[in-house]
Length: 412
Image 1: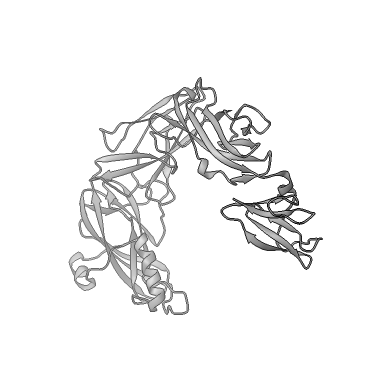
Image 2: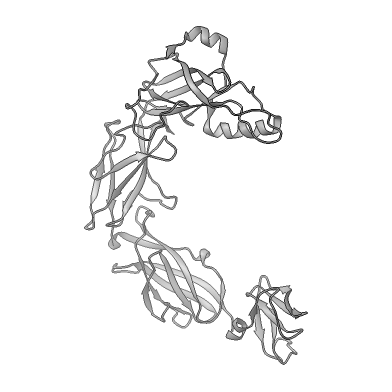
């Protein structure tokens, strides 16, 4: 490849917009509405969304500046056939990497360039390439920022705690370089290191996804960095004795109305003093209202299933109260309470579905517990909704029912 003359190239090409992956999506949408906001002979460079971490590697992606497609888009989409010339105006800030230098996981092909941030500053990258229709030129600015901190965070959205996992389980976490209080992009080999810790390139191509499997007997690992000498971190296992609370997500229980003896599931998460880890321990439950609710087989004390949901058998209408703790712990530190409505067995026996056959003209039935239906012309048809109440089946003479077969009525 021939190096371009930086000054003459800059004079002839002029400044262009800096594009990131997120901006590209908006531009494509605008292009579809306008027929294409750029010329069909333009090219663009896409790069990291955030500033590039010093000493890190990243892809720059050379693409057609006007992507074809759609009835009102008159662009044709062309592919890159050969990169003809490359230039960086600040070689002390940014450079082009050679294949084999960068971490595995980056793209190496005609349309993907690999750059490395060398020192804090801003550099302008200019590229000339031959596309499948013509030669095109483009440029973009890349900012490089010094790494002054490393954020080690859990990969799961639910976690609110330091990096801890139960013995034998795998902890997954992201290592994110930061500069000036902001996250930086780019792959940095050796960003975090520790015994048994492995890191690989994430799906975005600009983050390190790391993992550590805790020994069955438990343990801890100290994290260090080959990039930031002063960095220290810690990942460790935890056990039942470390659990200080059990969070019970009663608002996720569905349905709120059941038949007698039906089982509902209560999602839970074990919490530590520092917060909620990704992997919760199994939960032990003890009913404080055995006439209202028990374990699935009538137990007064039982354990949650493997998916961290406690099965609860509902016996009658009322408020179910449970004492909760981690399986194997000496105490039950938390309480869960939730109200359930239990309909009669007759109501369950008279459930029907819309547009299904029925035998007695004018008879009524419940459509789940949310509304009533009437038999008309041999089919069940919706009659009325019971929201916010429930549909229940009653005998003749009860709740104004005049039918000898009984009636489906709405009750508050």
